[in-house]
Image (cartoon, rainbow, N blue to C red):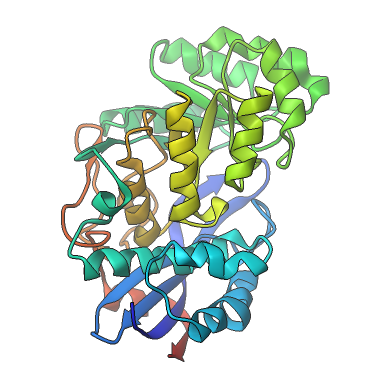
Length: 368
């Protein structure tokens, strides 16, 4: 692939409205855009999706920048790369730091697809020309949640996800179901419960949820298997799944009936596709999770979600869900509940250099 340079853009942009969970409130999003350019002048883009603080995983923007600068890019400088899958082998000596690894790997996938003049979705094996879009309601107010749900349904979103915790679960969901008895709803607990809450979680079977996402500890697989045996509602694992082996163990143990795939969390598109293929062969539904991304990561998610096993609408919403102005053109739009999968080479979106520079905090360039 004859790499000439890697550029890192650390950017920051305010959200249109705060994103609230019991773990953290995000009102300003910091992130890393990775640009890889080959000697022919073709560029591919990736995005580091770690947050500024380690509330979701142990990674942060600062740790990702450290890993990219001091370890991952130097590894790439030392050996030629012929395919993005090579990165999985190159980075094997570096433990975890999946979001840092994924940001560079994503850029190489985009570059590879552009070199071959094919859409990234096609390169990955995607079969859909459109993907169904879901959206997250993240607020501590029931009235605000109901207002947001009404708004999102009017905009065509096909699935609503709400955040729950022990102080906001049964009565919260009951009120939502009173107004919206039939819409597809899933509940995301972000590890807010323990097995001592089993009766509380069993009570949520009353609401005919699509799934309960990550009810127990963020690194647990075993106790989720005990909980799933007691629930009618499918459990979906998110934070517990950081590798292909985690998926294999979770399915063998019966820890869940659904898997959330996030490219950054599992270390890149190569591992994400392996997880998809494994689940697809075993009739385990998967869906693409969101990380309050900028447009580059959102574009990669669209390509991934075009694969046939993504049968549940993911957290891939319009650019306008979070941003007054995204960093890509055209921006991602949802029409009648669907997002069109681009048919242009690579991720199918252009990076708006003017917007990127407006929100730029710092930039680093590495020559090869």
